[in-house]
Image (cartoon, rainbow, N blue to C red; front, top):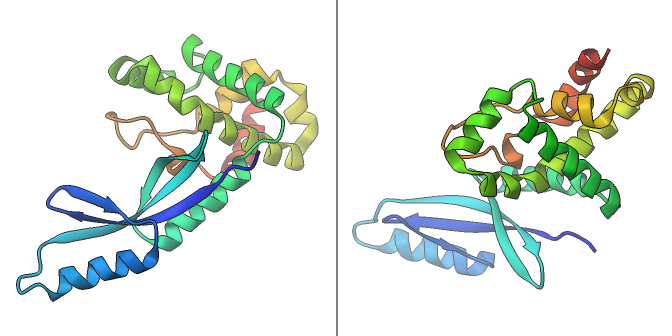
Amino acid sequence: MTTMFEVRPVIKLDGDCVSYTNETDYRQALHSLCEEVETPAFKTFWTVYMQIGSGFWEALADSNSQAEANQLIARLSGLIEDSPKDMIRTAACVWEAIITGSCENNALWEEWRTNLGSCELRDQVYTLTQWVDQVREVCLKLDADTTLEKPFDWEFVPIALGFIEAKSKDEYPGPEDYPIPEDIAPQVIAKLK
C-alpha cells in the first residue's frame, strides 16, 4: 500500500480556515479577497495531508510556504516502512521507551503524557516509529557494527528519541519538528559507543 500525501493551500480569515483542493479555486478566492474595497486581514499557509484508510485525508502539519510543505512530504515519504512486522516492532519499542522512562529526555515525554494524555501520545507513535526507523537506516550506513551491537529496544530507540526537543508544552512534536536523521545519526552512534 502506497502512502499518499497532498499539499493544500489554506486561507485563514476571521479565525476560520478554508482549505482548497485545487489551485484554481484558491487563486480565485485570493483574487476575490484582494478586490474587496477594504481588504480584510487574512493569512495564507499550506497544509500537508496524508491519506488514511479508505480515501480519508488527515491534516499532518501546516507550513508557511508551499516549498516548505513539499520538503516535509519528501521527508515523510522517506519515512515510510515497507515491512509491517518491522514497523510494529519499532512502534512497540518506541512506546516502551517513552512509557518506561528510558529516554534521555524522559522528563519532557512524561510532561507531555501527563499534560496531553496517553491517547494523544499513542497517535504520535506512528510518525515517531517511521522517524526512528529512518534514523536507524542512516546509522547503519555510517557504522553498522556499532548500530547493531547494542540492543535496539533498550539503547537505540531511547537514544534516538532523546534528540526530540519541545517546541511547545501544549502539543506533542510532529514530524516537522523531528531532527533530520542525517544530522543526528553521528551523535546517536557516539552515544551507542
